[in-house]
Structures are given as structure tokens and as C-alpha cells.
Image (cartoon, rainbow, N blue to C red):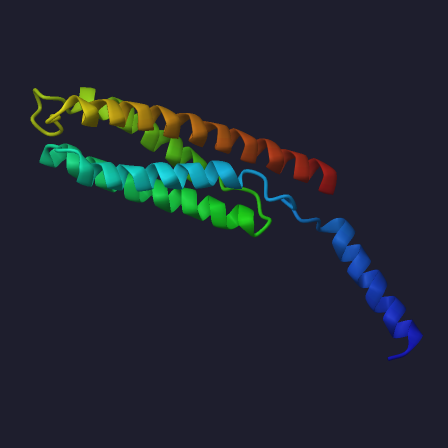
Length: 154
């Protein structure tokens, strides 16, 4: 390979690196995504540990699987030096909001999610608040980071 070709290849690589930087080189936000996925895993574990009514059991299992999915997806993206997905983080926040509201919306009178014990009720409230807070914060930081990357790239 001639020196001219090497120089041309080097300047092409340099141009690509300066105009297309890694949007998330420090893998920021991975721990938030991991916590969201762990909250989902906990929802699956607690549904097996606590004595829950069938409606609450299925609600907790479905929400747990969805939290694992969106947390895992964002963890994968951020581990690959990409920005977190705002929609996935927003879904985690909405799922958290649903966990907080579900015992009241579909409570004992509706017969859908009545709790067999107080632990199941309070677990949903606490996990819901954590998922809501982590999901909202993750969406906010992903949006903020995306705007910063667009500002510096443009």
C-alpha cells in the first residue's frame, strides 16, 4: 500500500470519527436500565412468593415481563454505546404508574385485582413508584443526551 493510499484512508477515518461520534461512549444510563429490569424480575419473584389473587398475579407477571423487556432493551442499547430509547424508558414509567394505580382502579370491589395480603398491595405501590421514577428519569436523560449529541454534531 502506498503512502498516499494510507494517508487517504487515515483522513477518511478521521473525518468519519469527527462527524459521527459515538453518542454514548461512556455507556451512561446502563445502571438505570439494569434497575428497571431488576424491578421486573422482582415482580416475577414476588408473584411466586406472595399469596396473590389471580388478577393481581397476572397483572404482576405481565408488568414484570414488560419491565424486564424495556429495561433489558435499553441496557443493551447503552452497552452498545448508543443512546437510551426514550420510548422504552417512557413505557417503564407508564408501567410504574399502572402498578401504583391498579390496586385502586381494579380494587376489591371490581374483583379483578383484590389482594390476598397487604404485602402484595404495598409491593405493587413501592415497585410502581420506583419504576415510575427510574423510567421518567431515564427518558429525561436520554432526551437531554440526544439533544446534546445533535447540538455538537450539527
